[in-house]
Image 1: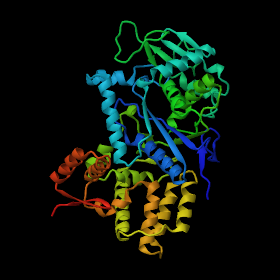
Image 2: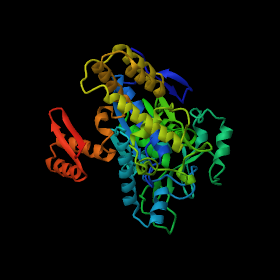
Image 3: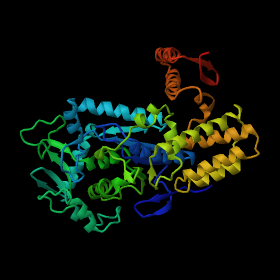
Image 4: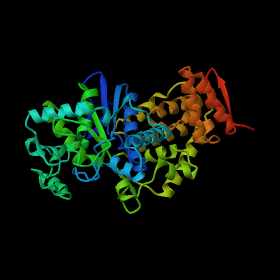
Length: 461
């Protein structure tokens, strides 16, 4: 069997993946829920979904944890500026807690539309203040912290090899940190563990502590929550490449200083989605597109974006262009047409093609080559039921809902999602909810047909 090899940012090379124990611990940095996720953010979550599905395809059991950042992420990376949640709540004249819940639900809805598997645990920063405070106390006891007028800071000079993830000379990290300068910091790369509430101002999100009323820094949440939920299985930590130099570097520094142990064995990072001209898509630059605006409002199946993401390796920048998206829409439709021509009967997965597919995905998630193997299967001389069984098997990783190919050309994505929600309701014996969803589907001009093999939806004549 082909071993799984992943590019580890920590060592800057592909390594054979060897889990610590029987269950693989996977931690993926989640959204800061002050606005909608843009399609650049969603590209990272897609890469992480391909990773998780590849691990499961290889037979690994997974425990997947994702944080929800609902406090402590400031507008400046170096612990300067306003809290993003508080700032947006003021701008929209809303309650920060309600704002966080709204955008958390919006994020989950987007990932469901993209067929991204949900984590086993979503953990909110605001639900784990005690764990973060405890880790700061551990660091304080070991002499890694100091106090300024605006908070409790981590002294990065006391952690050896601070730049082991970024591989950048310390001077370059310090130079970047000086863009936002705090005169009280001992070192430019020091970062806040606990920020004090500004005297005379009432924050919506603040907590008492032995240091004073305030809120946790951004970095402490991920180390505290990952250690809580994945202790003993700190296998893989993922995020975007923008997390390498600051967020993930600081996570490692504080976690390893607090525990005296290595913090995650494998670090994987997805490249940016760029807009025309090579500039990354970012909320801070106000040049971002949501899934709804970029895909759904154009009448496209959201899975078009998933299909597009499969065409570029996760470590290479991907460029957003309307014409590229149109090409992806045509490509996905063509694939659905090819699958429909295979009929509905499945037989055996074709062994040699399965081995080819496994070899490509196990080569650091080489999804473009995996898609080429899909075409090799479709063009082969194998019998149709074997081809279909093989394609369905591959789709456990690709996640393109190829088993719905007979429906997707006629039924909009939102109706397919309602059908699947109804199937989950029926599986959970939520009969009233299932009836409500049936009526909603039928009210939009579609017919549901239930059988022992599942449900099928078609447009009413």
